[in-house]
Length: 215
Image 1 (cartoon, rainbow, N blue to C red):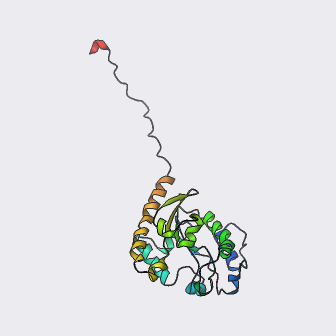
Image 2 (image 1 turned 90 degrees about the horizontal axis):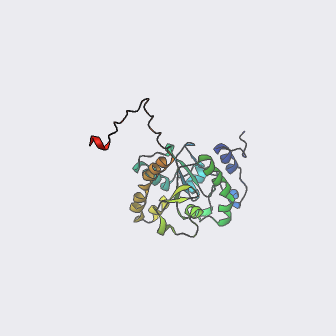
Image 3 (image 1 turned 30 degrees about the horizontal axis):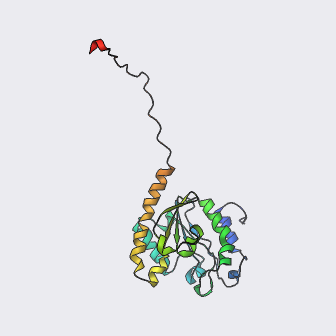
C-alpha cells in the first residue's frame, strides 16, 4: 500500500484517488491524478477532466487529447516524454468550469507534483491553469509568451479543446507550440555547468623580451 503522505508521485496519485476534499468526489467515476514520465523536462497542466477522462482515470484521452498528441508530434515529442495533469483532478458535472473552491481543494496536489517533477518548463493549457501562474491576466493577451515565474519557465497556451470549438485558434495553438522546444533548449543551456577552463600546460613557452635597443 502506498503512503499518500510520502514524497512520491505515486503517493500523490493515491491521495487524489481517495480525495474527499470537495463535492466533486460525489459525482466522479474516477479521479485523474495525471500521468507521464517522472524524469520529464516539461509538465503540461490542463484545467479539469472531461467525460472520457472521468471514465478512464487518465488525462487528455478525448478529442482534445488527440489534438494534444498532434501538437506534441509537431515538435518531436511523445506523451512518454512528458507529464500531463490538470489543475482540478475530478470532472466538474457537465464539464462546467471548475469553481474556486475546487481549484483550492486540489492546489496542494498540483504543488506537490511540480515540486517532485521539478520540470524545466511548465506549459499551461487554458485559462484556469494559466491563472495559477498569471493571476489577473487574460489568455488572449499572453498566450505563447514565455515568462520566468518563481524561477520556472512557464508558457501559457490556449487549451487544445479551444481549437475544437473555434477552428480559427488551431493555427494559433500550433504556432505557440513551436515555443516548447526553443524554451527547453534555453532551459537546458541555463542549467548546464560552465565549461571548465583549459588546463595549463606543464611548461608555458617563454616569450622573448625585446628592449628598445633591439628595435
